[in-house]
Length: 582
Image 1 (cartoon, rainbow, N blue to C red):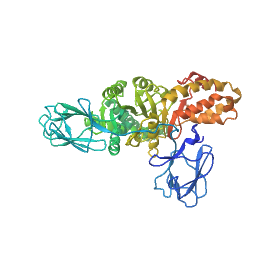
Image 2: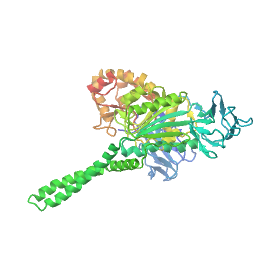
Image 3: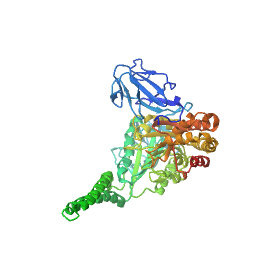
Image 4: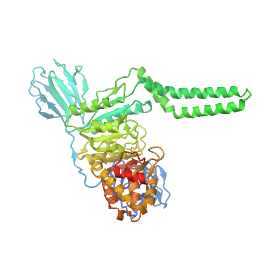
């Protein structure tokens, strides 16, 4: 299988810089020159696109590198998936291959404006420093009698706000909590200030409100799930981004943490015991046989213990956290407020979070972000069907979990959001690179362009084998109905069934499920289009290929969308009938 056979228009291939800037190149096989930047006059390497892959060769300077290794001069070398191409120096900013947004998306951006909203509905733009009080001449004059003449001071930065209570008579409050006088305090974005009895809100114009729900109930990933919001805060501060994060992490029960610790410990004990018994057995009449059996037991227990060592480490970490009494985790950051819930994950917890987000910020651009382990039916402990029924009115759904970019998964979310960002393949380390995705000063108004931009911004910070932005409306109204029509049309071509079956088999993936049961749809469509005479005899194939290209908004890594090969999968009826037949 060619790793870059995505089934998308070849013209959408791009080389992305470290900053997420994409450069197009010819895809008809014509060689093109490369410098430190693709448009640089100083050319050091040559590349060509052929048969779904990008080939690179050095032009003699021995200064072309793939993943830090020099490319042999004059020899064509394939650029592997997720590989970094550096020119001039292995430590220079590199280029990576990806699929850029389709042409025609609205590139207009939402300007970043922060303001104060007064109790009578009026708004006032923030200044770098402001005096607040009842006396005329203050930068913010409030006439309520509970407000002191020189009540407080404000300092505004890029997306941040600090308040200083000037020993006022009736105090200054942030979200209902009275502040200590003569001390600067950070005001979270979206918070309510109160000067005496006069409320003033700190807000952004049409902010992105991220409802973050993390499944930290599995100790081996609990640490990084809980740390994701804290990683995002510094990036939002630097960018002055109009982003608010309101979320929760369900860390599960102490029994589960103890079980994760106990299982590896028990298998290790079994290994030691088996070794001791094997040593004793050597002195008995059946010594060699018993020793062989007990040695096998010890080896098996040792292997299991080694495989489960990350569970032991995670379980110990969770138990230590409980011993410290860490039941709630909250800081008054400017952009992020997240708490840890002792139990869960539960659908009710997520629903409470989502309802609060909608009711508290009805005019925001809502993003639902779920983070945790992913299966064929769920992500972050939430069933896809339940998630799809719970959410209405979101602009974007982000599935920071494995198995998220399956047709079966995404089809459950088409009524919930306009676009989705997901990974079908393995998610590594600390999850998606959310700092690069959300840490921008401005965001596209068009949700499709917004999702594509976020995926492209992550080009050099891969924590997933694939990352794809999906147009859920296109998926619902074009791609899924198209597959329903394509299946029966393909079955009417029995003479090509052998080639279709071969294409299906070659498009199966083993890294996202067991027994190679998942099929990469983009790869499969590309292979069907290469069967001689098929596209001419089946116009439905062209229609599906075109709708697939419109459905996938941008992609990094390898693979696009997948579907389950099993006959009982929840796909359109016509498509399921075709899969069963071949």
